[in-house]
Amino acid sequence: MSPDVDLTALKPGRHALRDRLLSLDLKLFEVAAQRNWPLAEPVLPRLSRSANHGVLWFATAAAVAASRTPRARRAAARGLASLTLASLTINTLGKRSVRRTRPALDPVPAVRHLKRQPITTSFPSGHAASAAAFAAGVALESPGWGAVVAPVAFSVAMSRVYTGVHFPSDVLAGAALGVGAAFVVRRLVPTRAQIGPLPKPRADAPALPDGEGLVVVANRASGSADRVRALRDELPKAELVECEPEEVTAELEKAALRAQALGVCGGDGTVNVAARTALHHGLPLAVLPGGTLNHFAYDLSVEDGRGLGRAVREGEAVRVDVGRFTSDDREGIFLNTLSLGVYPELVRERERWAHRLGGRAAEVLAAVRVLRTDQHPLEVELGGSAHPLWLLFVGNCVYHRMGVTPGRRTDLADGLLDVRVVHGGRHPALRLLSAAVAGALSRSPAHAEVRVRRLRLTGLKTGTPLAYDGEVIDVKGEVRVDKLPAALTVYRPH
Image (cartoon, rainbow, N blue to C red; front, side):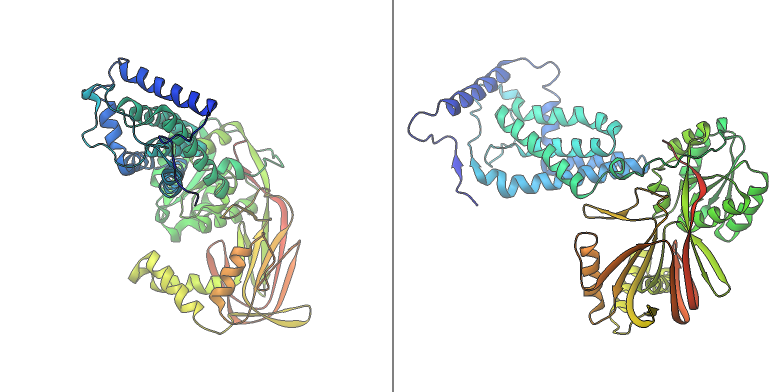
């Protein structure tokens, strides 16, 4: 770290530009101190105090997330992540790199003074950095919520000059740092707008004004009640059927007989069943995310009832690929991924303990129990020879790594299977972590990938678990995987 710089201890000699800027900064501070700010006296000092330690922004994030829309929750999380990065930068580098004393309070009316004066150095303003970081982070994910938060953030930043604890340049520098932190977070974790798929190939689908002709089957177990109500507001003439998980397949079949378009609200497993039904009956599919992960809906850029409602009313749709697998007398489709090896074992172990320990604790226990064994969970024949594997992943279309986020698909009709393999060996946890970190960034001895149009695996033992779209079945002998190119029509807002 470079030595601290004290702006109040001027170096000998002439520094015309620096002296002019510092003089201008002081004059602006004095002008602000002498100016009468209407209605600011009862508001700004309290607002400034409420932002201490980020309390105001944590409360604001909770209020934004309480709207229960996926975009609002992501906006709140992005705002807090941006704030955290800005605060860490200010406290570890900013305050230590430039030592600047606080302004003299003499020009500032006493009624504006904070009850507790800050004791840290003045440059840059941590409050301004946190306010700008939070507002910018929210706006990058949700411009609407950003417009709501921005006036509050601006007021917090201005309150630091109003109360006399910062020079204007401190606030400007802090705000610039905060906005920069928000863009760094976006670089690491792209927004939905950055990773949405291209709207192609477009498909012909019936435009259903007010949703008349659309029958939506919702899985009650996925906690989709709020989203179903939102969709009802968007499409008042759509028929909505809520049912228990064991009734989903039957209700979808009945709905397909009377619908112009089939709708579904639930997680990836429920959507898989709906896609199979829509394919069988030749119907377009409307997907409303209602589960925990909702990979397919989010890769379609469908987040809530508003976007889906517009697509259904206007007949906006695309064609997407469908993955297909067969094994002896078993056959199925997958919209997202198919996998063998560690992941199906983890799913089964988690389900075994979930009812006793809860979801999160069961996931941790399952990972420990599966990864601590040195037995390879999978052995397949490739090219005529046997290969021990920890994981074989097959994606329906190519998954791209963006920042530190999991892979996302930008084209749902590329005709390809994205095959990733983690080779067997010692230390399975380390190998899996190495493969995850390597991703598309580099090659790892534990990791290999290839893009193909079909795949054939032989030599699978009886009872080998196979997971597809969150469901797990047993297979044996041979598994063949291929694609149904552009086979399914789905509503998607363009």
